[in-house]
Image 1 (cartoon, rainbow, N blue to C red):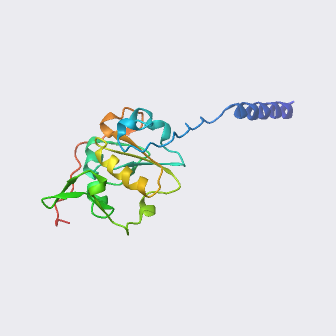
Image 2: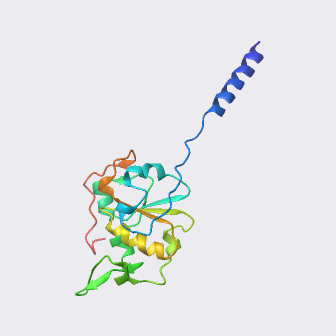
Image 3: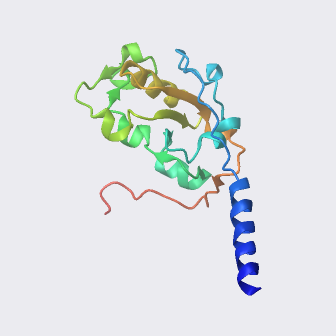
Length: 178
């Protein structure tokens, strides 16, 4: 009788497990040519649907201190535009010797930048920053290289369940003090 009970219990567990299904991943929409977040078919409101997926890379382009002071979204990659990409990937158009233009046609693009070392060409790239401006600039550069990209706008608009709060205490050390 014990043997029968164990077999029946095992069969019940196996049949119950087969009824459980993993949530189906949201299909990826077609990218749009516009770099503006307002035109993107994926928004910050939908971002949680695309986090932690094998076919998607979500990139936070904000500075390190923004990420730690204001918080960040779990499941994203941090690749700060001003602290890393600017000057390496591309330099924005200059006015009086200072980079000011967010127009990619006025940027100096580095032809030797190893895009694939930072952005996986086999994945859809979802970009955001503080407001969407840096994300639009980087989206345009990646689109020109054949990437599948979306600009979802600014971190300030994220209301999802994966926000990790910053403590407001993070400070970068002053240059030359380390």
